[in-house]
Image (tube, helix red, strand yellow):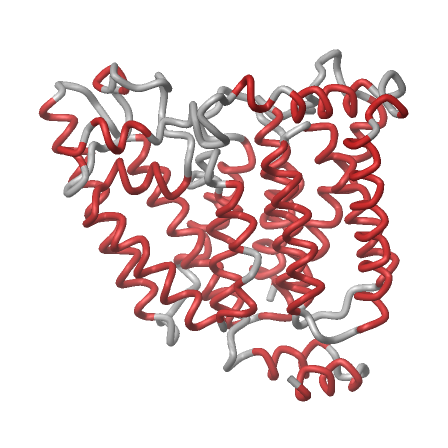
Length: 392
């Protein structure tokens, strides 16, 4: 148990330090190093693989294929493409280890995740009250505002997934979402803001227990949507009072000028059609000078698009098999947090974000088979919540 407490502390520390980027994007950050210690220690504590053996098989196939593709292109291009392999191995290990640890000790790890997510968002909100910098789009300690926005979206997804089996005080939940909304506005990320609103709406649709909390959150969400409609239909009433809202309004109004071909233009999707020779086996990652007939000079700005172009039909199919297996085991209707995540992923590549892979671990762990036992474990003194679940 002492070792589990150490692991819990490392996981909590990871969640708290995730927003602090000390080095350039694409490199492991201090939080990643802490989580790697968590993974290494955990590997030696797992004595046997649980019932999620197919998850391990699909993950190993994905690692094998991604490694083969990038190593072949390294040889062909006389380059070294190693970081994508290392990131995938790291993230898949985190997903697999988290699945095993949560499955064996759910009460302990869900409590750690809940405290870590809430504390991390509250800390970022407190920092934003003190320091926001002189940019129109706030980054805090991230390298760019989209990283801040995606972090908030993923943290909120973790919170809603845990909410399925652990009752969260309605005041705490609404306060958390208000702080998260504020951080979203500071990031001025249109895609993330829309995805965040969709996440809350899906929560109100699919979660059936604790109707008082849903009612309060529904009233709040309706009020926010009405306020947003007023702001963007009558921007003159609000402009000049808050620089971040001013910049958000400006970005929405000039969206067609910045993206004359539509929302997905300038994200690199044309690369898929301009270079069909890569669509079967994949182009690998890196060495983007190969794609000189592309609007985007760097990687394709899309989670699904990047996986498809980088690893072709074969690699993408393995990834889809892994994803479908997790969704099937999780219960499709309760996998709704993936919808806003992938909507945001239409215009941003979030495949290297470790929190995304943690969410997959949470979804498969809180599945149809485990949900009732987890409910009883967490809520022995709260039978009403169990009754709500049994009514579904």
